Every structure is written in structure tokens, then in C-alpha cells.
Amino acid sequence: MPGPSMFHPQRRARRGAALTLVFAGVLATGAAAGSWTPQGQDGRKATEARATARTAARPADRAVAGPGGAGAPVDHAEVEAAAAQAVEDGRSGTEAAAEVVGRSGDRWSAVYSAGEYEGLERALDGAYIGVGLSARRRGDGRTEIDSVRPGSPADRAGLRSGDRLRTVDGAPADDRPVTDVVALLRGDGTARSAPGTPVRVEVERAGSRWARTLYRERLATESVAAEHLYRGEVAALKIKVGSFTRGAGDQVRAAAAAARPGEGILLDLRGNSGGLVGEAVRAASAFLDGGLVATYDVHGSQRSLEARAGTVTARPLVVLVDGGTMSAAELLAGALQDRGRAVVVGSRTFGKGSVQMPSRLADGSVAELTVGHYRTPAGRAVDGLGIAPDLLVHGDAEERARTVLSGLGGGS
Image (cartoon, rainbow, N blue to C red; front, side, top):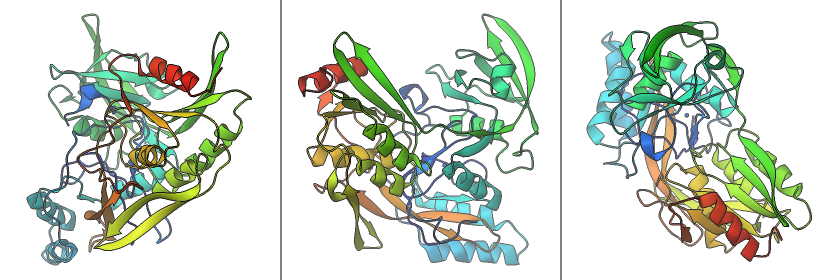
């Protein structure tokens, strides 16, 4: 299972608590809880081909981590030996490996049970099992529902954005890391993480409290959405990319190719937790006339990622980013910025630029351990630093982005 990876929101090195992806950030979370927004900074059986370059992106049910780099590198051999010895002694190899990872202080390395990792692979395909809600943790420690997916179990139960989430299967949701709330809602690491299994939630709205039993479903993610925006004679094509799941790169290319005459393009990567790095490179290929997208190293060996010839290389382009723009999405924004192809507007991105490599352990669990870092075409490091926008915006970033796009000659 040799595929390098580089996203991973912060997770705890213990079974059931981590949400990971691989080379660029697929935290395709299955509709449960957590959003890549500033409010949530409290802390996504692969074949060789499927395990390659990915980032992290669980499209819904996602949690947030604060920026920062990895700790001391974790030795693969030590982790594998600890897991093997534990299995031989009749103990959990997953937990033994997680202990080694936890001692390293590397926030991006993690250990997953076989079931958890299979769920991450499913998320990479743009599907997940969940109840259709995302949540965030407020500054006062309360957990509230951020959004509810139309037609989902949460929607049918009458849950709304802004409702306070009090308990999940009897466990308090307040003062708890969003990653834990996510695991409870999805049933991660248990037999309950399957379609049709129940999860009991208690919510509060306007001082009234009540409980509902939701039944998890297999839901499809919508990673890419395009919208034509008009204001007077100003027009733009907005392409929103929520995560880089399989097929997202070609969806971005198709959306960009459908831009109408006179339209500039707003590429919205806000809240994008990453995904498959190959999909991010394909997305870059829509806007670049070939050439370098990023470089990365694996155990000191340097490698490069190259774009194909693009389809909309001359249209004005503005990229929207924020603190929830992570990993593969940062790779894309940095490439378009360094290559002089786009103006980046918003706030500094998250700063996830380390590469993880997955390996199967003795008990079937999977360890994803940091093996290197990636850089933008200009050689800039991203890990712990993020991408600084060309125009820092504290208010309505989209409005400012449209103004910039108009000034570039697009949308007029």
C-alpha cells in the first residue's frame, strides 16, 4: 500500500478518533459533524493504484484542526514492530501502533482500524455513510449544527442549522472535540457505522429540547458545483469545489469549459479540506498550459506533479481561499498563484503540506505516517505556513473577488 498522502485534519493517534485521507486531503466525511470554519478550530483495502496520492476530504461530517507542522518523524519499522508484537501477545495491534505514533508528536500521522480505513476509501469515491448534517464547535464550547443536507435523515427529522447538539447516543456533545462528535454520529470503529443503524441525538432550539432517532444512510457527495453569477452587465462563472474526490478534477475542467463568452471564473476553494492530489492536478490542468503544479519528497526522493494543457488558459481567474482551505486545495491555489495564472483572494490557508504514506499492519489496521513535504512551483513550503492571499479580505470575500475579476477584464 505505497501511496503517499498529505492532508489529514488533526486527529488523535488512537483508534476511532482520527479522520484521515491520503496524499492531498480527502476528509470526505460522511454527513455527520464538523466544518472547516474558524469556529471549529479545536480541534478522510486499497490496492496499490487506489492508495496513491491523495489528501484528505470527508465531504460532510468533518472536523477541524488548527494549523501547524508535524512533530518528530515516525519510524515505520517501529510502528509495524509494535503492532506485530501486540498481536502476538493477544493485544490490539491498532492501539499499540497508535501509542507509538502518539509519542512522536506528529499530528498528521495516524493509525486506523481496517473498517475506518475502508470508510476513508469509500469517501474518496464521493460516498459516505451518515445522517446528513455538519456541525461546528462555538467559542463557548457548545456544539451546534452548521448545515443540514436536504432530503437526508437529519433533514427528515426536522433538524436545522443553528440547533444546539446536546448529546449523541447519550454522550454530551459540548466541550468535546468535533472529531469525537463526528465519530459518534458516524459510528466510526463500530458495527454501527453501516446503513440503517440508529443514532440518537438530543437537540435544543429556542430553549426547547427534544430527542430524535436518525438512521444512517449511504449518501453521495457533491464535490463540484458551478453557478453563473450576474450583476448588471457583470457576469462570472463560480466553480465551488468542496473536496477533491474521484472525478472532481474532470468536473472542474468540464465546468470551466462551459464558461460563457465574457465570463471570468471564480474558483471557490473555501472550506475545501483536500482530497486526491491527482484530482487537484487535473483541476489545475483546466487553467494552466501544462507545466509544474508542485514538487514533493518521499524519504528525500524528489518528485514533481505536472499539469496537462488546459482548456481555459486565457480567461481571467480569481481563487477564493480561507482558513479551511487545506492540503490538495492549497496545492492548487499555490500553483495558480505562483504561475501567475490567478489572483488569490481571502485569508491565509490552513497550512497542511506534509506527505503521509499508508502501510498495512499485522492486524489489518493501517498506519499513515509522515514521509515528506510538498512545495509550490516557486519552491514555497506550505506546511505550518499556508498560502497567503494576494488580497487579504476580512469582510465579504466573494464580493471583493468579483470586483477583482471585473478589473482583470472578466465578467464585463
